[in-house]
Length: 127
Image (cartoon, rainbow, N blue to C red):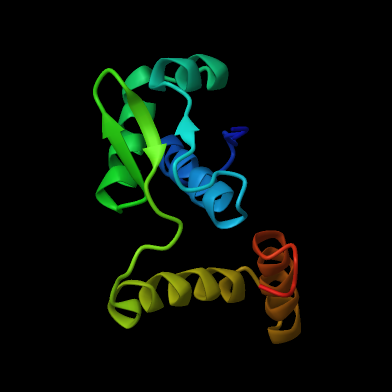
C-alpha cells in the first residue's frame, strides 16, 4: 500500500489517509480481504503521529471499508459500501464542485478536472 500526504493540503492528515486508502480500494489496488499495513508502520512511513493513523483506520472501519481486529491487523472488508446515496454523497459532491467553481474554474475546466479524476479511479474505462 502506497499513500502520501501533502502538508499544503487543507484537509487534516487523517482525512488524507482515509481518502488515499479509499482511492486504493476503488482502483482495485487494495482488494477485499487484503491486509493493510500496521498502524505503527504507516505512521512511521509517513512521519506522523500514531494516533492520527489509528483515527484514520477507525474512520475507515466506521465506513464499513475495513475490519480491524486487535492483534491481527486491518483488512479490506468491502469494495462497495451500501448507503443512501442522495443523503450522504450528494452534499460531498456539491461541496467539491462548489470549491472548484469558487476557485475560478469555468464549467469546461470543472468537467475536465472531474473527468481526469474519474479516469484515475476507473483506469479501465469498461468498468
